[in-house]
Image 1: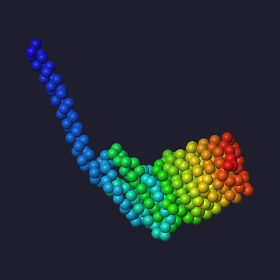
Image 2 (image 1 turned 60 degrees about the vertical axis):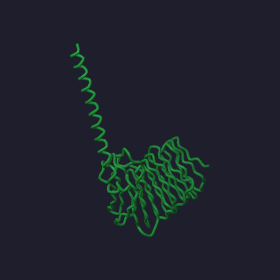
Image 3 (image 1 turned 120 degrees about the vertical axis):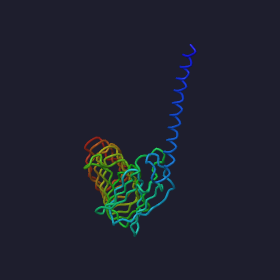
Image 4 (image 1 turned 45 degrees about the vertical axis):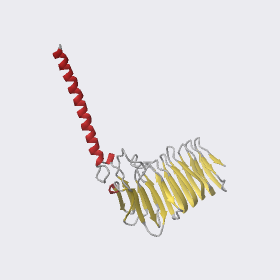
Length: 270
């Protein structure tokens, strides 16, 4: 009987020892893993951001911008072209900035994140002229000051390349432009102020929205297939089609009104 009890005790002790040894080994491995994460060579998922720093990138001239995921973008008008990236010093080596055929593309390759704050990477662009900004980031794109570019397109859509781009990043823009074009088919929201001589607003699907009651547009064309509202402020004319559930809410009734209401969405003057 004593031998049986001794054998049982040894088995329990051995099992407990193995558990303790496994716990110690895992803890040691965990400490080793995280101890090397406060550097640019750390494992991406557990890599610490490090001190926030700014780096200016020298690139070829561009007039179009495509910003990819995990990046906040700020655009400012200025005489000299400049691209400045702000992020953690350990993350900077995984930021990719390239120009191809006049289009600036910005990638944040720090894709896995278990220990860092989100939205750390910001890009500040200064340019005398931008003609197109495409959002594939999921984070906001904002203007700094007023953008007085002659012609500007704001894109958040994937009609020709489905699922290639993210379509849920918001735009907040203060504009003084001659021609403005918006194309969206996802979840993006456009918060616009300022003025435009001519504008073409196209919401082609999903729940994207335009809040432009503070954007004075002389002549406006709309195509509205979104389920959400489009708020506008045309002065001379409003033309186009409403083909889904969302309403077009106009803060002014211009002399020329030529809008077809082809489904439940309505043109409403307030």
